[in-house]
Amino acid sequence: MKKLDCLTKESIKILHKNRLFQPLIKAEYLKEVLSNVVIENDLIETNIKTFKSRLGIDSDDKFDKWLTTHELDLEEFKYIASQNELIKSFAKEKFDRQVEARFLERKSDLDIIVYTLIRVSRPTLANELYLRAKGNEEDMGTLASLYSEGIERKTRGIVGPVPISSANPKLANHLKKSTLGEVKMPIIIDKIFLITRLEVLEAATLDDFMRVKMREELFNKWLDREVEIQTDNFLARDKEISTIEKS
Image (tube, rainbow, N blue to C red; front, side, top):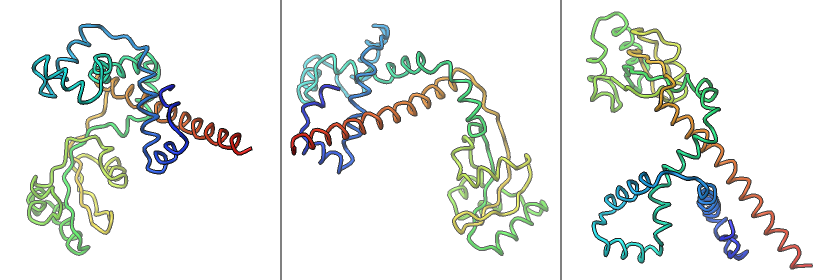
């Protein structure tokens, strides 16, 4: 990351204090990592056209003006337009062999669920609604639309389909222990009483979409770790320079 060698100790200090130094390290390190990745020219051209369309660039004059305004050259524009594809290619090459292990590790959080939810703040009402729903005295969807205090009131209590990991951790664990169609006793989360019924549980499978997702997770985890190391090294080097100059 030779571009960062131009930074003075004072500028590094200001960036670091404002939590801007690590994002800068990440951007430059990512660019360095992806510089050796090769993707097909046709894909690059498609990415450029798509990115231009998104920016509203429909002529060479507009393109030249945009590059000048943003102080970029054509190669830098190609990089920005193709960054996602470059990351996918790099992640596939580096992490494909780890995908299955990552999937097995994460599987229970990737399952797709649909559930009915009623949220109320009064314990007596929560208990009453639970008994009415459990005893089939009234339809749980109707009870949700009448009494629930959350946005699910507008959907007759239905939440999903969503990954189970998108729910509050305590609620997700509660749903994992549920039987399909079972109205569960109220639980308390942040002083709110939740009554739930699991409607659908679809186990996650390692298809092409999930492979891409797992590679992306592995890549992001690796990148964050590498950026942290690079940042620490840079700051440590700067301290050594300061020490040398003072002696």
